[in-house]
Amino acid sequence: MDAKQLFEQLRRFQEPKGYFFNTDMEMTLPLLESLLTNKERYGYMACPCRLANGTFEQDKDIVCPCAYREDDVRDYGACFCGLYVSREWNEGKIPREIVPERRPPEKILG
Figure 1 (cartoon, rainbow, N blue to C red):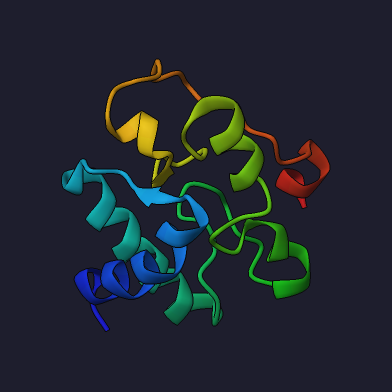
Figure 2 (figure 1 turned 180 degrees about the horizontal axis):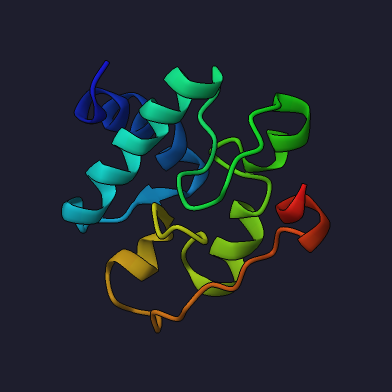
């Protein structure tokens, strides 16, 4: 599977839930490629914008879509990576703000 195939596969499942891919494909496709790389590396699609520990149990909160996506998209219109966004964000109807890291420091430091 390549990034474009992953895009189509995930899009079908995520859009009905109100989550859309960022329309900036120069950013979106490399993020999807990184998810595929992490799947090869770890056996699961760890968030490409965070440092995975390599143990599913310790990383399950950052398996894409991560546990923080819902709150990020609700509060900022985009997830931490900017991979998943709201329709309003893609349409430029809401401000594009930097999304702060929600992952607790103890999980980051492992």
